Image (tube, rainbow, N blue to C red; front, side, top):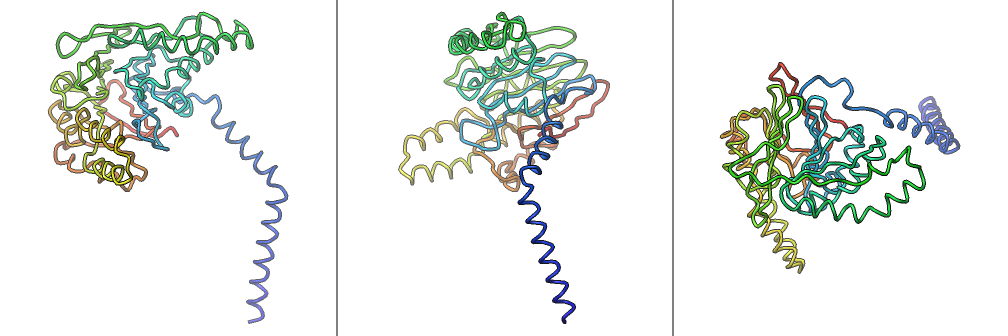
Length: 359
């Protein structure tokens, strides 16, 4: 018995000494840990070494509803050697940088439409691309009619910031010509879809989708060397999207779970927030449900479905089955609930679709 007490006292004493050592050297320990984190994260290039193909990086999988784990709408597509960003919601550019993507490589932004959660982060994206590469030309931002007004507004808002940075860092580091963005307007497709970009074997097709009362709303299909991904943008179930997405390897489709959102609406109404409650009722009409996204995937014959633009927020992975609901009855292929930091790779000369996390 005495021996046990001795052992226990020894353990307690050792623990106390350990805590004391940690307390005494916590600044040094914290500094060491932070240096290791900096060495591991700063300057890393998540795109280096990727096989030739199409790579889809989810940098914003949320919606305007507050979600601490998801930025607003943002998806990057690396097709061959060309890096594009589709939509630039709040936090999207910062998430992309955290994923280890060299922001200076962003060649062009494609906007699906002009709701705030798809454009709020355009300013930081313009800035990071400019300062990340000493760009000498402004960032091209392509989109349907209306994109010129969006770009002009951001350029005006960031004009003073740009002047400050040039004065501080000098034109060699931040060339004046690289500040801001330049709009590239394309006409809404007369039919289901229209090609809006072609270069080095990469084809980008804009697809007319259903997001009324928004009239200038599109999705995009990126195709390269036999591999392709279709991004829905924001849409209700859209036959045009189904037709344009046919044969895609991957469909990234927005999704709103009506049963769960109805609960949010009930709680808002009960709390006396009638205005916000009505907004949550209204948004059901212009977003697809997971079941409808799965129907689109099945009818288009795609190989994998990713549910994106998650409404309402999903704070726990254990809740994902409730969000997906009956969608797996509508589509037999893999269904993934999108998370910030996910990357899907579609290498050329293969039918493989691989997934990994970059955060």
